[in-house]
Image (cartoon, rainbow, N blue to C red; front, side):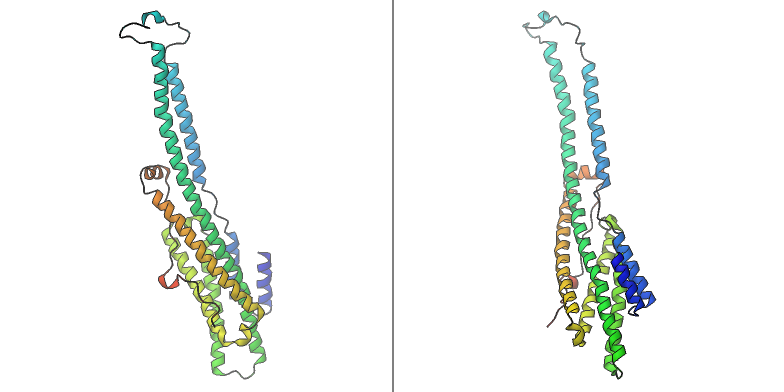
Length: 307
């Protein structure tokens, strides 16, 4: 965060960014770093506490039932019941009753706990894969200030060194500057949505907005690269070539992380709809997760380094 702030301040002092652009870029970075990794579900701990209390209640019920039986200190006269036709001993009947009651109480509880823990594992997998996807979004966000600095520094150099600029060249410069402004604005919008944290995963509308913001951000990066083709000096610089390679790799990682996230969401959503897991999901308030689905035309990574 300190390094990014220093970079933005230096760019503003050198005239590479106006005050509005600097403020938007600074707000984008502040929002991005405010995003914490998706924590483990706090509800899982509460549910675990409930299960522990239920277990203690069952144990207590068994104890009370056992204490209500024949007193142990009374010596039973087994001569009246043992080996008599049609009779059976009370000493044999009481333990069997306790075992039956214990099985009726404990086995369903253990089965419920196993199904609950299975759903928790599926849910945590969703949060884990979302954290990886979010991390790749942030990696792309880290490259935005480098792109902005490289392009705006080139534009400033062009403005200072060229005295006779043709109309076509001036229009290209304007398109390049406009692409930078859109890139900064869309990065801020995407960063603001990522601040929602885990709620994005559980809210279909928020997820749709995030998908739209990420798609627009990627489109602006692609557009910026397309406009830069008219500047051989810019495209041939080592820094610009490195940024292209890093962006291309980041886009591929985002696609892989997104597919893993959607797979985890599918497994979880499928589990909470199946019996008997759906009963556990309803009682424990497990919520359906949102898929990260892009528009059809935005499914493939953009070509950032065309021939």
